[in-house]
Image (cartoon, rainbow, N blue to C red):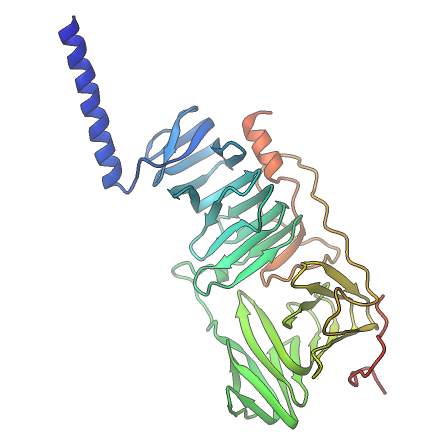
Length: 414
């Protein structure tokens, strides 16, 4: 009996050793990614994923129709996979990454645990430390939906390394045209706009002619008597006044004008609009309705902002605090000022009450205009009720006036 027992134990050891070698050959490593809390209609590497099991680095999980999986990847961290979801997990030195291939993945953490969700062209992760809850959904039509249920979410375009922040309580969409899937008809992504008029202006140090094209990354400058008008879209144009320098960049389907010095006027009559950024502020309309914004970075490093038409949202980059500048008002922010004089900070967006665990599908833009974050993805408004808390619980079963001093002449002045 003892001899037989030893043989069985030895045979079992051979089986375990053989499995480990196979796992390594398939790109899987002994690094434990997460423990399976619950699982239904799900597989890992083609085999049934059992509750109370373990996921290793390199494991690919597929959840079928009507199925769900709840994982615990740290004492305070959980991740939920909804039905029709495919995810491949990896781990290195305690940093967990989930490559989302399809479906919906919800993530919850209670501290600074590292958990990154990736798609083919973007990565999503909590910004800062502390409690965070967010959701990423890769829909069948190739749109990507992101929800920041608690805390902010950093969205990074992997090709350029540019990072943008989705504020707490907001939901955003990355269109299919921006995800780079094979076989899609893509327009040249480096074209920013057309030069409607130009006099005394340069592009990257060379003369900028009327009728020319502005490309992603171009630095435009005007002289003492210079001026140029750039058509960004049929409903959107920007004017650079004299002694102005600004760089144009694009992220997804939106243009960012980074004003270094001088004054600009951004006009929009509907649809998408330009994001105006300085070293201190991000400035944009609160809706896609008609708007005209005048921004100046003065020689003393003060910043002048006027909302000629439409309400304007001003975000102070260093603090992350936002302010509302109502239509028809203006403000001059001295170089050493903290906040925006004459304007009260906007309240933080409250975290929506969790509801159903159903992932978002075919989300619609709210009928009423909602404030947009400074990201250049499409902001859909407040996060849907199906957030992280709901998903995890469900799967587990349980007016600024003008300041004193010299101000530039604005478009509204007679």
